[in-house]
Image 1 (tube, one colour):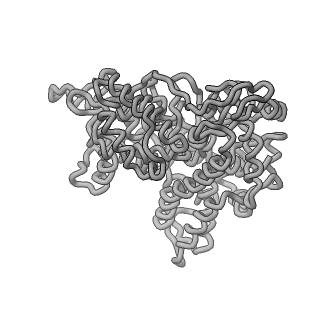
Image 2: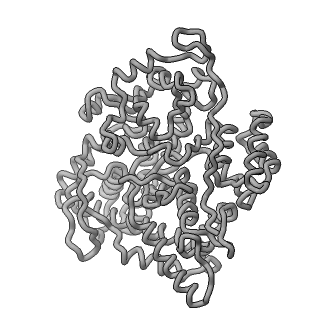
Image 3: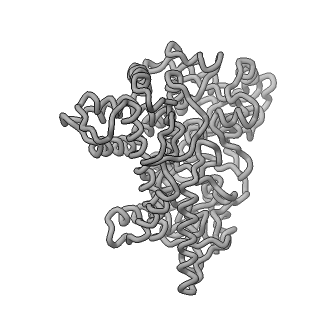
Length: 542
């Protein structure tokens, strides 16, 4: 079980995790780090300057409620007109804001505000913010599902505190700015302030983590470091960012040995390329803490782009595996297990796990298929990164939706207008005209919604999957999936997320080719992608 490329193989010790056990290509890179670093599961209380130091990195919860409240107060005292940073954030949010349902006074409700924050951090930074999981079914297909790797109290705390402030302000001015859940609705300006406060907290967490790295290697933040030591500190920070090892803060010698092992390990090329780019930019002879902090922030800003490269490489491998199915954007499960080895990767997620991820199409029971766009964007290909956000593979469909939001600039538009706009997207180049049956489906969606197709609805997302099956994930109905990381799924289901040899052999033995007429496969495969008429809209909150 291994990635057969030059960068990664089983002789690095992957077998120590479990016999015959394989992980997704992206997950294996981060699991490899765990081989050289012991992980822990317990978490101690938060600490900050002046409090007792915990023994281990993973015992630390850097940010306190007081820190979060302070960040929100600072941002709420600023206005986009007087802050270039807030203006930039507001500009980035504006097109999404225009296309979301509003309250009667033009504001967005609680859940819709969460969705805006999520979209901002995914689009601008590649960060999947922890603690923004959907609270009701209207956003379950847009927001991460609740699991330990996505849990954080911070976004919810900030949003609730913002809404309480707005409620008090509304009562003082006798305003009606409340959504149908009884929470204060927010304006574009206020969502902008919330996003800025979250960014502030993320930067604070990075600063505190860098301070821990100094302590882990036996240095004080007041010291001016020479070039060699500064490089070691940055490499240690990258190791912590990627793996969250259980490093004893008071044991610099042991941590130095861990760092030495980390430097010898092989990774996907983009990881080392990003590290090399960061280190070669360090041309000064000495470095104080502020200059080190700037480099850490640069790494966290730029690494998501490197991670995107790995995601596109993974996607490219999967696209090469097409051909065994008439259905676009899909790979027969048998090919997923069998053919991948010839392309340098080895995929072994079980059918049950793929089903709960939402990455398995079983509309033809004889021909289970892996949905490429759903698989690439799944939790199986996320890394934890920091306590506040995860790095996942960004769906290429996000780019298309963003383009449409800018063109439509409203919560919805007519079917004819959408067909015209979608036909103008760069992704349509060389595809020809949109099929008549898809135009008819879009017209039916509009007819069911007073003549306007909602941009943020399940049916339009499903329609986009039919037009762009390789880029846009299939939007399952709420409750049909149960996304989890491999470990989380195993813990909750009691089954392995990795297919056993017997399970793989059974899938290969029962493979039905697209053309029928073979034993057990009497009919040809239908090329039609699945379609259901159940709509789910982002809550109107009027």
